[in-house]
Length: 88
Image 1 (cartoon, rainbow, N blue to C red):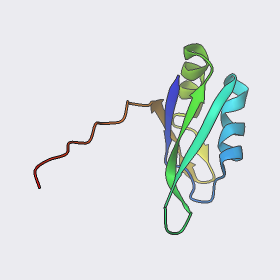
Image 2: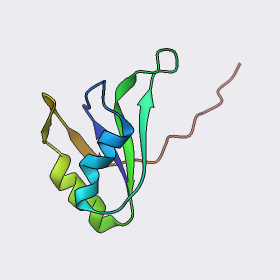
Image 3: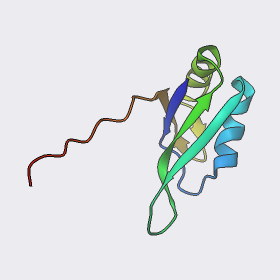
């Protein structure tokens, strides 16, 4: 199950985000979204859990949790929207 985690501190690392999720189950992957020019995290990322049960536990545990003076948001990730190629 892939999760969106938002309202993260800008100085968080992928290993820190993974350690927040590990107590709830097996983490498959972690990806922070970073600014392509500065390399700084944009305050959100995605975590993939091994199964839906672990994913739901992460959502229950992290959503609304206070972490480094930020209130985290965690919910199921939506599939990426297809980009339309519009007229040129």
